[in-house]
Structure formats: structure tokens, C-alpha cells
Image (cartoon, rainbow, N blue to C red):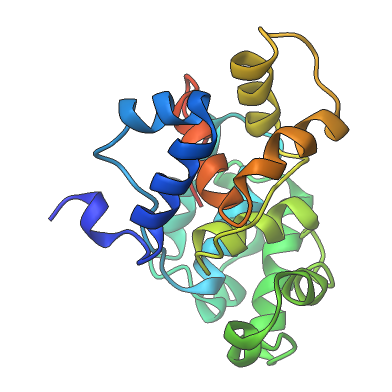
Length: 210
């Protein structure tokens, strides 16, 4: 089965709604009709991957992540906490990112996050829970909502890929303000995650997935 067959149940409905409302998105969706957002694995895995990818290129993030997996193949809180600090740093992680991933592992291992309740919580409540972990800001929490929880209406306004795609497709490459991005995105609700995902697909290189 292809990626589209593993997409969230709402995906076809969201695509149709977005294509009707936004001709620019309609063209992008047609160009990427065989791809869709796919469910991700464990919450810890997704969040650790997002921390690794912060503020570095897609290529660098993928390379470092491969080395992290060689140190901790399951990428579980237990494996990360058992790993030697220097070995993790030798993967290409900064000292601070090693500390962030270790803090994330501690939060999971000690049950400090309300993971079992997240499915019933609103997006903003989950974000508030996550940003208590060192190294997780709003952007990382939003990536988690999109890629792990498959929440349909997240608009990661601070994401550079989204900003670049909106600039290219809606403003002829001109610099664009957050206010203007929000105005463009008004028509996408309640499917702003889906719109963002297709805009990412339109970029080269395609932003890393979490």
C-alpha cells in the first residue's frame, strides 16, 4: 500500500476542501496527489527526532539521527538515559541537545508528561505540557501535533519552510509578515496542518518530517 492508504481518515476530505477554497493549494495538491502525511511512531521517538533537527539543515539532521540510532537503536527513554554522554555528543549533537534529549527521556521515564491524556486534550493544552521540557518550544510541540498526533488544524507560524512556501506561492518571493501568513491561512481552517504539509512538499529541498 502507498502512503495515501496510510493517511489520516480526514485526509481526502481535507484535500477536497482545500482545493475548492484555494486555487494555489489545489495545484500543489494535484502535483503531489500520490503522497500524504503518514502516522509516526512513539511520542518519545518523534520528539527526540524534532530536537535533533532544530536549527540545522535537513541533510545534517538526517545524518546525525542515523548515528543516534546506532547508539540507541530503539530510541527509547531507557536507551537514551543509559547511553554515554560522549557517545551521544560524538553523533554530532551539541552538548545542549544531548542535555535536551536526556531531559526529555527523564520526563518520559518519570511520568512527568500527561501522555495518556493527550488524545483527549486540546492542541494548546498539549503544547503547554510539552514546552515544560528543556529544548522543546512551540515549534517542536507543533511538529509533534502534526506528525505524531495527526492533529488537522495546526498552523506552525514560526516554521521557516511554511514562511518560505507562502512567500514563493502567494507573494512572488517577497518577504511576508506573520499577520499576512495568518490571513492567507484563514481559508484553510480547519485543515491548516494539511495545507502546511502540502506547502512543505512544494519546496526543494523538502523539509524533514518528524
